[in-house]
Image 1 (tube, rainbow, N blue to C red):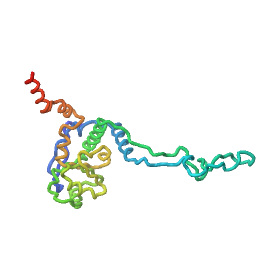
Image 2: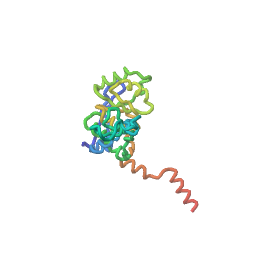
Image 3: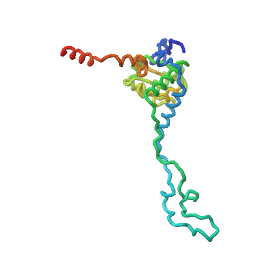
Image 4: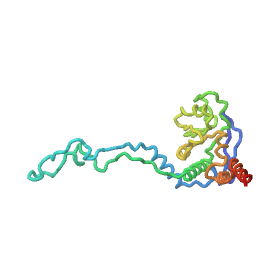
Length: 238
C-alpha cells in the first residue's frame, strides 16, 4: 500500500473541504484475512442466545410402562413409548443450552480492526466530517441531507465522539446506518459497511498512540510523572 494515505474531508453540510492524512499503522497495513475471519466468527457466535433446548427420553413425561410384552406378538420389542423413534418421544442427541462465545485475545481483535480499516481505506471508503457541532438537535433529515450531499449510498458506519450524540441520534433512525462511538467500533461493523464516516475528532483520537502500535508501546515505556517523583524522593532520602 502507499505510504501516504488520505481520506476525503467534508463539513457537516456535505461540502468537500479537501483531504486528511491517515495513520499508515492503522489504515495502511496489509489486511490479515484469517484474523478478520476468526474475529468476525467469534463476534457472531457471541450474539447467539444459546437457549435452544430439547427433551431426551428421560425428560419427556410418561413412557414408564412397557407398551407390550417382549415376546409372542410378532411386533418389534419396545420398552417405552417415549424412545426417540416414537411420535411424541424424546429427541436423540438434540440441542441443549450452551455458551457459544469464543475467546479472542486483545491483540487479535486490534489486528482484525486495523486490517478491516486498512481494507476500507485502500478502496477510498472512509470519509471524514470536520465536526457535527452545528447540529444542535437530532434530526434524521440532517443525516439524509448529509449522505445525499456526500454522494453516499448503501450501508454506512458512523463513528463519532461521545459528545457528538446529536449526530448519532440523527443517524440511528436510518435502517442502513450503524452509529457508534470509537470504543464500540468493531471488525464486523467495519466490514459490514460500504462507507465509513468518521468525525475529525474521532479520527485524531483514534490515531493518537493507538494500542497495539509502536507509538503506544513507546508511550507505555515512558515513566509517568508519579514514578519520576517517587524516584526523586528516593534519591533525596539516599
